[in-house]
Image 1 (cartoon, helix red, strand yellow):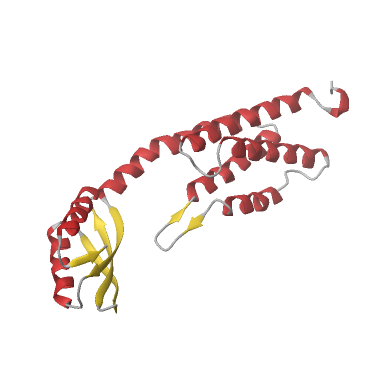
Image 2: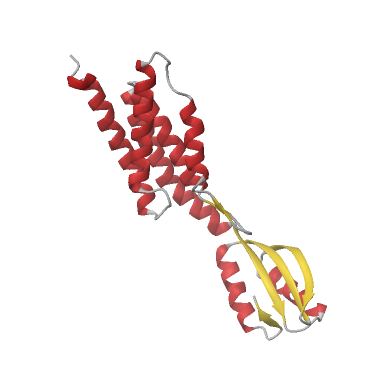
Length: 209
């Protein structure tokens, strides 16, 4: 029997599961100090649950426009600089949280709970795999300023990079204030790149990097 104000017992179950699933995903994001944290993910999951419940009662089925609306929120946590793009994983978690909320709002509690657990497993387990890949195949964009316009200094730096068992690609070479400048994209083991940084600190030919 529905409760007063048209709230059925199943509605309260859906709201509770939405908060639980959102809290589980939100805790993981908050723990890693991401832009969309604990409360944000809970509200996204809860909101998509409520919208789905309302649209079903109106005889319109699941509101697919939620996907578009959540896309705007996801876009707000993605930041791009000159080197990298950050926030893509958090945006994906927002998207998944909305899908979980929609499944929960449609009454598929098993799917919403299993999806939450699987999402957490992906975020936790594959994080270690990503760290390993980043360690063995790390990338860094070096911006180097030499203390003169002597092109041999750049050739010396190329030899040093090669001796550190790293691959490189020169992206830009120019001259400013009587100094040679170069942007070099370096890839290889993270430890080797760290050793390269230490070497650059000791090179008298380099003014700044």
